[in-house]
Image 1 (cartoon, rainbow, N blue to C red):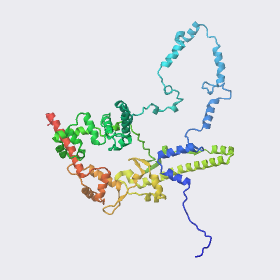
Image 2 (tube, helix red, strand yellow):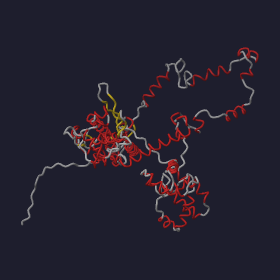
Image 3 (cartoon, helix red, strand yellow):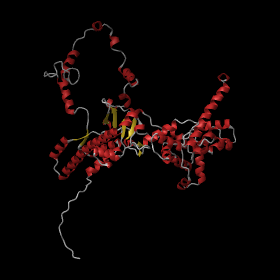
Image 4 (cartoon, helix red, strand yellow):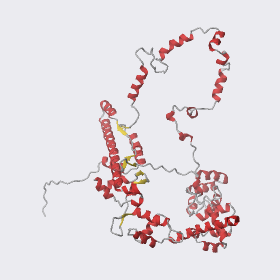
Length: 543
């Protein structure tokens, strides 16, 4: 086979992921909080970027100040308001003051006759030192005095007055320093406190703790026994049963019958009162009282202490009813960073910079700043376009509710706005829409379709979930709906669905099975009847 050389021309298309394109894609899928953080970092990194300000520019402010400060051309001798606020300039005020000070005021009697009162009432005889002391002892009346030198209202920070919350770890550490004196026990106790979660629980297995600390298992257990007596009661437990047992011991109510009940919480969750009564060896009245005591305990004792603050969700899009009966979609301007490119600063620098390296740096900075502003603008336009199409597709949801939510996928929206599905997917990630029916993530409006029983329009999966929940909420205690019964009723409503799908949707909504619901509702009904009978026995007049 002979080897030869030849020239060929080929024409092909390929997508090159430039840094600017990668940046635009990254910005598109960021939430408003992440976007704000990214823009703040760019403002610190790029000297040609500046935050857009809604206030008047400094030049305009200076011009306005000049209009009010110049008065007329008489050098401050007229009636115009001067820079010091007393009419005219500061220099024009001095001669008048000297003239007043040199004027003869007359004798004491003449002064008192002019003022129509005694000089003792006008000029206090109290020494200046006493007046200064009284002023120092007086309570501060402004934030500036409290703050120790704040310069104005713009420095007022309400968060400066908020006390830090005591965390569960800090609360336990304070008790640890009092409970133990030996350094080894304090070290073990602090290690266990660090393992406590925000609900107040320890991991079930503490075998690795002894190995890491170089202590015996018995030493760890001894320290743990002391920690479990700390406030709040029930803290440092390794399971729910142990947490409830600690609280019952604190109340001196942990007898053998209560111990048997705590050890069989699974039966209590199933409402199997008959089995619990046999295990505990008590009658119906005693088991009801014991269950009432269990309910009054705190299963998560650590939750009452300060924990991580939840970030408030801020919507990216607002949907409001329009005057023409439609819907008005607008972006939340508070979530859109406002940045500008300082072209003036760049033009001044380009005239003074002589080194090629510096010119290259500022040229790249200008290009990056321009691309960032364009990417932010394109991101806002894309979000608005996708949100508008979602509102158009799901008009029935905004008008009538969840039952009228239509099946929708990314391809339908992408084809309508002539974009790629991946772009729509990035836009709907971590974005929220505030509507007249609540605030929802944009992905909420994309649901799978379920075929109709009569061959009509398909139903949305979210609408079917809502229908299932309505059926279960309206069921009677004497007629609990099984999954098969729910399937029959849904098919009667024109929804073709399988039983396993009903079970999957029910479990996703954390709705128990029909057997468990029957026990719960019968138990609730029994509690109501027992309460009514006890009230009758106490008040015979009600019978």
